[in-house]
Image 1 (cartoon, helix red, strand yellow):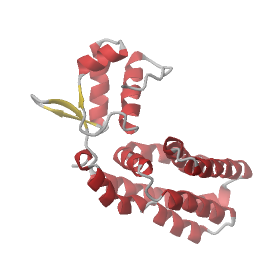
Image 2 (cartoon, rainbow, N blue to C red):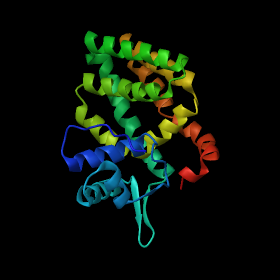
Image 3 (cartoon, rainbow, N blue to C red):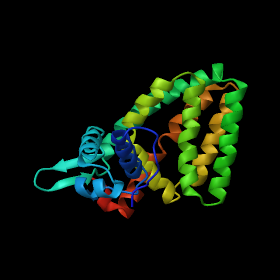
Image 4 (tube, rainbow, N blue to C red):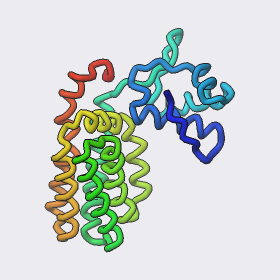
Length: 224
């Protein structure tokens, strides 16, 4: 069942945002058949905005269209994951180093508050909350260093990686290490130690590399 959150935008964007959120949150799992007619009926919209949403999702590489076979939620492509991880590492290393110089007290407090919530989510086995907080932690660093556009570029490339990360968190792989590394990154930034912060963020962004074998073994049908 799709998430029926009411987005405050046009019908076309509502359909796209709803489908994209469902795919990214694994409510619609990789390989799932998806029908324009069924989606239109479920969301109570015409076929036109659904067709437009399908086209955008195909361009996002989240939907695969096969002639005479139909449309499917794209499988997770590990080559795509590695390219996104490489791009993200280059960008976030720069952001973290800059954060040591320019991050103000307001952003440091927001990051500390986020980290405190991560610990609660981990201790309460709340994987949905931890998934959201993990992403928000990194976004706050980008916002605090005035690198909003860089963050947006990362998100456009990170579609396959984010689904892999969602799986990893749901399986509780490296939960403690994930949060501990966030704490170490924040402490390094607070202490103005850019070299240490860079070393930790590089190790942190490599966690998905270590998780891939186990994830693929547990969800073989989700991957190319």
